[in-house]
Image 1: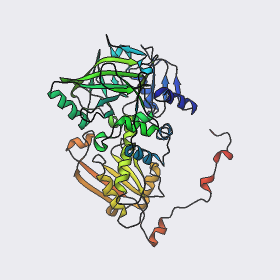
Image 2: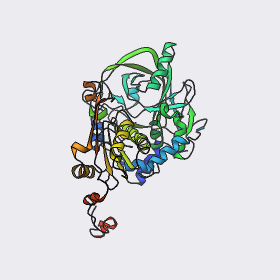
Image 3: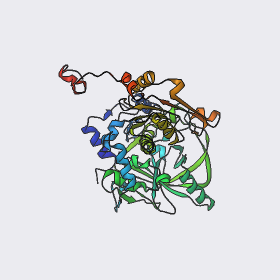
Image 4: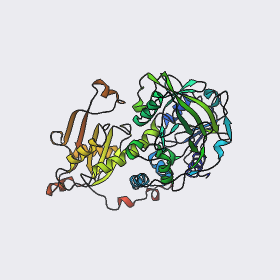
Length: 450
């Protein structure tokens, strides 16, 4: 179905007047990434001219929350329940004989830097990197499909270094490596919001086939075609597919690379993918993501589902926010309907226990907008006292991806209970209200205001 994957997404963005088009030539080395960073990777941009390439590129597609909700055909209020429904009720995908991705098939003389305008983003990056690629593998036992975003260092020719990271994926590769067997993979570029969202749901946690989650999210079967050189299925309407193998017994140095929280990742030996086949549509559009905003925003959405479900067993939860400033990993805000004096502290305990990577959480009442930093600061300033409302847990589990954790190998956790007290004294914390304020349409007063 042509309404699947990137090209239909671009049509949607144009119809919503959300797609910027850059006709000026940009250099894939630093300049292209710099333009995406200027907009914090939240503005979709189509680059029509990339230096040294005949291909167009597109980036910044899925970094804006509200826009992402529209592309997922959901709302902020419904997003948690849409994701829960897809996880609980995966739907079958559809295998078709062929699709646009098969319009061009290359099996000889593969030179990735020559074929594609692969960006280099930061001054100290070790090489150019594919950052939007979704890695596809098949579970050796269950035959379920697993997809995830992986950073891919370009080593020249047909070779990429891959940072596997995932415990399940690492385990599968190491088991095959013991038998001197490669792990077959495909790398997908040119996908839509549903495909990205499905890739971020943990197979290890939920035991799901990512392609079936995708089908559930989009409300129709994801159409897939067989690869040419590996025993995998890939989206029929994607732009580019790289088929290859993570080869056993080979490691090459990877990094540094500027990614999570804007820091450079470590230099270490990592496995190698050898690309044996490239499939692409006619005039393929090369998908780009400034590291690692889109991937982490969607990770944050999944962690919001997990945070909400953990907290609701303790308190009456209104909404949750895995924060952008915390890299969509380390910080959380949550609003609750406080019914008991200990609800704020119970919410802190459950929130910090929902994921080892969360370092801090702020709990507020339902009258506070947890997606407005000024409102959060207002709640802390006017409803919290440090001696009574700050909880500190020293020396807890943390994330090795976070630099301050590496100083000791543990992370201190903090929770702030910024909820108002119950009972008669709560009247002192009632917010002043302007009657009818929510109904004001300011354009009626200033028609020419943009």
